[in-house]
Image (cartoon, rainbow, N blue to C red; front, side, top):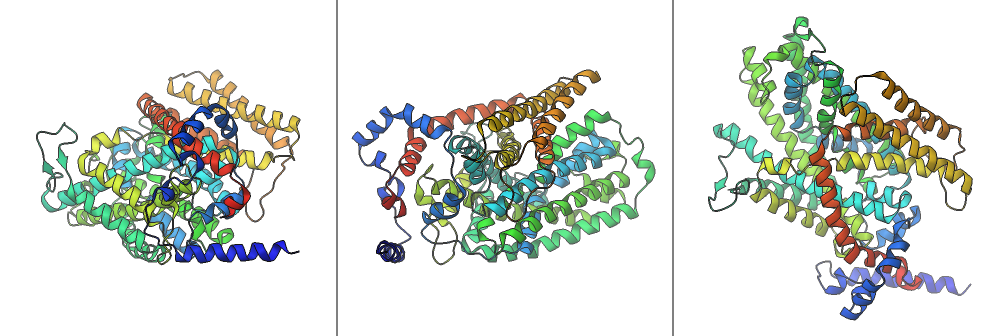
Length: 584
């Protein structure tokens, strides 16, 4: 009975100490507080124990309680719960609906799928919606800033979470840099019809790095500065600017259908089913960005209500909007006459509305701006949760007491993306993009199945063996189906066999008992929807090509080096520190 007051006093002392400590600090202890990094001899000792430590951490899983409570204490100050489902809906809209739809739609309608690009958007939208459902269930159950990192860490373990987190963070930083360069190019094209107008050429630099872009750096600094100033303020700014986008999109759809000709839709499938599916893999990138919004679950007022409505509602709306925009374009202009580089602008010029091209340009510019705003918020919160786990220095997890935002984490992604955007051209940046996003969406679907069917010390060993066997069938058959399609196999036998194996694996899971049910909200039709999400993501990954896979392997190898020499020892020390130190 006497221990409880002492524990209470300890909590008060910790809170008081956090209040007295300055936020602006950068001592070695703030970056590397773990035992392994206290001295050179302690680090040598840690390195000598790398193998047993790796064995300890390889399959070690976090818990809901750790992510929701203990990990948050690393930030010292809480993030503010100020977002509703309305905020999440528009943040998702602002993050997803960028300039991509204005460029990719014309490109794929002309050379990829023809008028059936509408079907490509529908297929990609369904795939994205399946991933959104998985994210929504996890967001309700584990409403923390880390999004997929926390979900994977709880269900699949530290090691897989680190590999996934490193790749998605790298892609997000490079994507932000590319978006900054695109913003600069678009503005320059509107001002002087020269995309390099604002750039400074340095002949002594290597090609691809010889056009310095101060405008890209400036727009990244402004967007991230707004994101650091406060979550609610950024949300309101995003909502106001998104209304402008909605008005322009409605205008495009209405004018498109007003000047439409049904004859332009014939033939509807000029490139066949293969063209439709390949275009679906390309236009899928127009749907990415909702995962950045899922990272803000910790700041929602009522996660059980706000996250499902905000994420599922926004993705449903975006899918309908994209399909209508694609249909309007292909009905307004014959697919063989669509301009690949500026589809909507040229289409309006052809019907005598040249002034409308400026509306399209402004809408695309605004879309890139809100994508930068929301992306900077999501990337910073993703980084915050990684830092809370000590996989990177916990200094980046600190939340500012006044703004309620992770300023250090935001500065990290801002500085990195600004440096990259200043020197690197768009063609170099685009070659760095990989399948990391699809890979993580697939892992989240797998993690959801693990969460439903495996609970430690509850699921019997025979049940675990059956589950792993059936999961292997689902993954292997999905990879086989993707390989057959991308190899150009035309016979139906191979597809029937791989599809049948997928069906048997999923049916087998459906017959197994589930050992955990969602507390409030969950994905319907489990295991069918998560299994279908796994198959679709692997199918789309297969169409991305050898270069994307090679980049993923190289980046993962570099991240493994960091993990073995730094991340492994930091997380091991945190997992095995004494209880009183852990509480502090």
